[in-house]
Image (cartoon, rainbow, N blue to C red; front, side, top):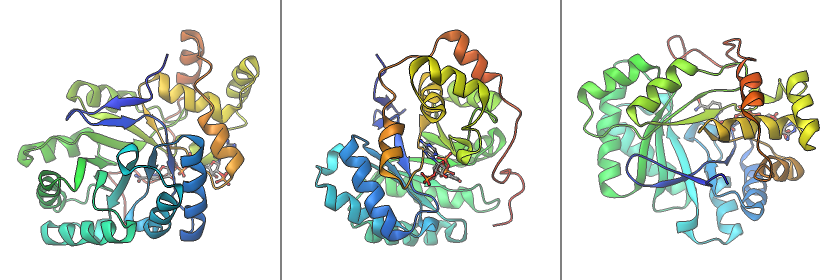
Length: 272
Ligand SMILES: NC(=O)c1ccc[n+]([C@@H]2O[C@H](COP(=O)([O-])OP(=O)(O)OC[C@H]3O[C@@H](n4cnc5c(N)ncnc54)[C@H](OP(=O)(O)O)[C@@H]3O)[C@@H](O)[C@H]2O)c1
């Protein structure tokens, strides 16, 4: 049996499977979030830059679940990095979400020269209880090493691009050694790998789709996973992954699809 949550370094339980809402319009985010929460999802992953925190908050309210049963992540955008501006950006995110705390607040990208100051503000937000956990996104090992020279609190999560064609094994090993949870963004390769023959063939054996096989691979690899869909059927499909188990051999087959292929920017060379 797969545990539905993962214990972060500070003891907070984070759901292992959630809904991503990048490139989802504010209005559509309300529907997607409501469908996901009705399906059983408890983790929602948004960001200030997605411009849908208001819609996400509305979906949460419409679902009518107890706040403590939900896990909401949002992220600090690059142009808001810096000590004061991080505090302001966080307050603005909470306001748009209509929440009085988030479960996880992440630095979206490692903006050089700024992320250490941003982190100081994040530590204060964490100490205030308005973020139950704090972490980073798109940090390579060297970014984390730099951050930890000045950090008082170690990031609890690193959310990185990760899918069967970019398996990130060296970074995952480093994160595991540091007790930092790994969360995959674009876990389905943005839909580009759903016709892959290996994934389709493995799925046939279990009467599962390639998307379900990939999500299962993430879960069995101890990776927190946040597939995005704006379609109710797919949102349900992506959550229907707790009734089968990939064999060690199948896990290896999927690992071997790695070609170190990035769909997004390399965190060492981004211009936004
Ligand atoms: N931290 C970062 O820098 C960062 C960067 C990128 C993403 N993220 C987060 O990670 C989340 C997921 O990544 P992503 O949105 O880039 O891509 P993804 O989840 O890998 O793939 C989403 C794509 O796959 C399609 N899809 C989803 N489920 C499907 C299914 N069962 N069958 C067929 N197609 C399916 C979706 O289409 P439909 O929606 O049309 O169904 C969409 O086109 C984001 O939403 C965001 O929350 C974070």
